[in-house]
Length: 211
Image 1 (tube, rainbow, N blue to C red):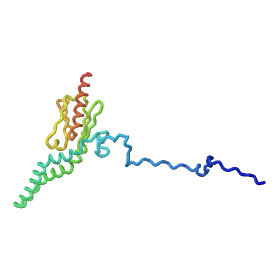
Image 2: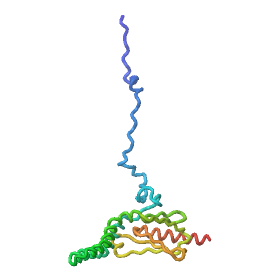
Image 3: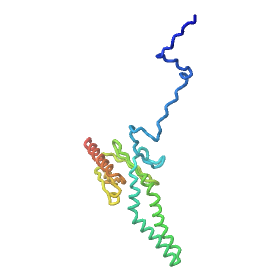
Image 4: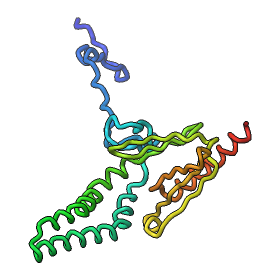
């Protein structure tokens, strides 16, 4: 007699393949840097003043619109300088005195360096509003980093000229207790200038009240 075989249970799951269970699972792909997580806050801007420059660590840059503002404000000086260069060349051609052309070198150098170095000078400007003091850095060849404690600031004001107003910029000027000296921070957006003015005023009052 041939033994009867029982039918397979349809609800019974087949045994997994041993080769598939021993195979390591592929790691999940890392998030692409070109698509950052929208939940993460954007990093604060930092001073792009070149590596190793004095006072560049942790500084916030001023507005890049200050470059255009300074170019526009410097147009009269550029025009006068170029006119002096042209006049020196014309006088040299009319008189034959070659040394007159040397006079035109000075305004030419001033115009060229103004056009070439203005972007670097603006990018070298930075500030940091700390818990106890305000730090301002400026300069390329001759670098200067100033730290002003809030308690030594006697007054703070913001102002703007017609060119700054056109580009939405303002300048913060602070007078300190050090022999009536003043500290200026140009190239600030109007909202940031107002925020800094309120900050240094309120913290200065708090420091004076604590004495």
